[in-house]
Each structure stands twice: as structure tokens, then as C-alpha cells.
Length: 281
Image (cartoon, rainbow, N blue to C red):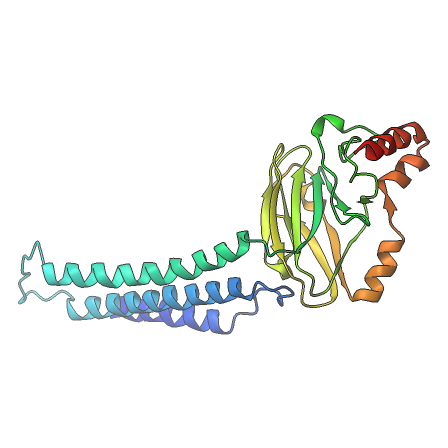
């Protein structure tokens, strides 16, 4: 009887702890409420199965407790029971997988007109690149990376000069504007993750990965690297600030373009070269 009570206590304690747990995810600040709904659905399904199995175990321990006057019955197969378990399990697996596949399809399908931002991760910090007045990000090549061109921008790309570069500062984004984040890593694996936005994706050296989201709540949110990237991983932090239009425009006007960065470094020859190629284009 003690074992029965112990199993019941585990089941009851688990349910109570889950329902009144002080630990839960942060308030959502993006359009990805579907991710939260999918996780909650998973909790309900797996929780119901956990409770059912726990109560069944307690029942079996009590019902079939040792009795010297009882004799076990050997039944190697039970087709009816096997079919029932197979059907119930199939329904449960479909209920777990289908919502996640729907959310994933939405996650990788970027809406037309989404504003593109490049996020660059390296040990151990973040930098960003925004399209300039032309609204298009210039192309990059890892071979171009040097002290004067840390992003590896192609000087023969006419869209590169007006790109806005943000290095070692907070990233500001516009509230209710769909964003596509193009993710690059310059050294090892990183992962750009803001818990309130829910979305995240690994950043792989030599590749450009991406995800999209729409911020729906103004505020300042902490950036985490969700992929262990070395001894300074714990300190690879930053902030994303979600602004309304006026505050965003004011912040953006204070940022430097690639052309201005080159000029401040005395690289007017590179600017002239790029402008000539732009005119040729």
C-alpha cells in the first residue's frame, strides 16, 4: 500500500508543481504566440498521458498485489489491446507533431516586404547591418573582411556604401514591422536568441541562416547566445530596443553608413573606387 501512495503522491505533486510553478517563460513580445500554444498543447497531452500511466500503475500495484491464493494467467498476445494502444498512440503523435509542423512552416516562410537586418556574431559580441536609403543590403564576402571592412562588404556592389553599420551598440527595431534577420558567424557557432521573441536560429560560419518575426511590444530586451561558443559565451550579451516610429527614426539618423565609416578612417580612395563602380553599374 505504501508504494501505491508513493506513486499517487508523485503524480499529484507533479501536477500541483506544474500548475503553480513560479518558473514560466517570459511575456511574449512577438507574433510567435503559436510557439507558446504548441508547447502548452504538448504539456496537456504529455501531462494527461503521465497522469493516466501513473494512476494505472497505482491501480495495478494495488489490484495485483501479492496473494498466495491467486494464480497468474499467461497471455502472450492480445490483439484487441495492441490495436487500441496503436491507434491511441498514433492519434497522440499526430496531435503533438501537426501543430509544430504548421508553426515551422510559418517560421520559415518570410512574408513579402519584410525589412532585412543582418546580425553578425563573433567571440564574444554582436554587430548589425541595416539597409540604407536604397532599402537593399549590399552583398558580402568573407575574403573582404579586414580592419577597414569588418563586415566583408563587396566594394563593387552599388548597394553597399549606404548600408548602416552598428558595432558594439544596441539594436533598435520598429514596432509592428515584420523583420527578416540574416544571421552570420565570423568564427564559431553562435545563436541569436531573444526569449521574448521566441524565435532563434543557429549561426553557422560560411553560411547565412535566417528567421523572421514581428515585434508587437515596445521595450528593451536582452540578447542571449543560445549556442556554446567558447569561454566568453556567458558574456555574449546585448540588447534589442523596440521603438515606435519617432524614436526609431531619431536613433537611425545617428548611425553611420559604410561610406561614412570609410571616410572617418581616411579611406577616401576606397569610396571613390566604390562610387565609380556604382556609376558604372
